[in-house]
Amino acid sequence: MSIKEFYAGCNIFITGGTGFMGKVLIEKLLRSCPGIKNIYVLMRHRKNKCITTRVKDMLTLPLFDRINTEQPGVAEKKIIPVLGDMSEINLGISDDDYDMLVRNVSIVFHVAATVRFDEPLQEAIIKNVRGTREVVKLSGQMKNLIVFLHVSTTYCNCNRVYVDEKVYESPISWQDAISIAENLDPKLSEIFSKKFLGSFPNTYTLSKLLAEQIIKDKSNRSDHNSYMPMVIFRPSIVISSVEEPVAGWIDNINGPIGLMLAAGKGLIQVTLADKNAAPDFMPVDLSIKAMILAAYHRGTHKTPRKAWLQFSYYREHQ
View 1 (tube, rainbow, N blue to C red):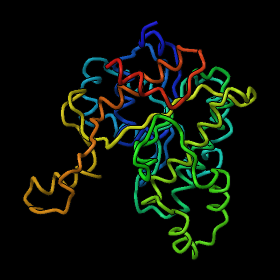
View 2 (cartoon, one colour):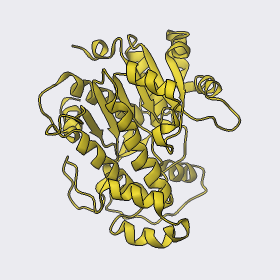
View 3 (cartoon, rainbow, N blue to C red):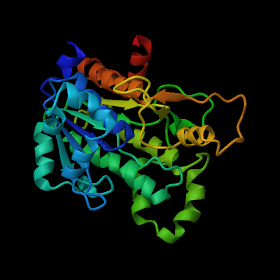
View 4 (cartoon, rainbow, N blue to C red):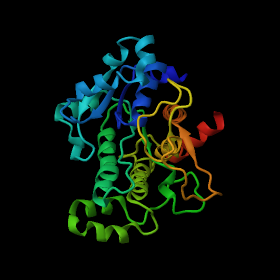
């Protein structure tokens, strides 16, 4: 079965679809897998704009010029916004929309996360850990689920010298972390955070590791009642596209991009760095291709495989 055939006729649910990687994922799926039925995108009303208006605005970006030219009207027809919020129980989705997703969706891409390194502990856990739990809970009820892909990060184990493609134990269970975040006095959060983080440099890396624990639990074949076909995808530092749908596309100045831009403009001429350190960048279009391929491979291989080994297949076959 080809990749196009695998995705043909499928309804897909994407969290984080309005983010940097999410938009590129949507565009690539629609353009390269024309048989896809619908793409449901979890979205919030924002800045006095409803979710329908936000989709229309998104489709005016240069990122979508190619598909709008080659397949006019397809994106508008197949992208269906679903009102919700990652920080809410049940994702803040209405009962009707929740039931609709349970009945129709067969592939889930969980891309949403707060990527701020200085995010307060409570917010990082609520969004990245409890939010993941809620997406998994929804997906576990889907009648026709083929595969669930969770986007993590290479740096969720940055406190280790060597990292294998496996899920490492976290210093605290994800259940306890959620309970702490839900009940911790905000005034104590900053004091508690320093002790809670331990060897982790920030709340982002720790919360992403905790989220991986949820995926690991649900991909355990010994628990037939809760088993789900899962993939953990760990990209490194995702930067602008190298080729498609347009070379050099990016919509933010996060991470190294801000430094590159400032240096290019002459605003920064000197910076402190380790001359022996090699930055690990990954173009967004290659990252998205790997995600689509990893989901395809997991969905078409029913033999027991650990969820976190999927990226090695892409790396060996690119």
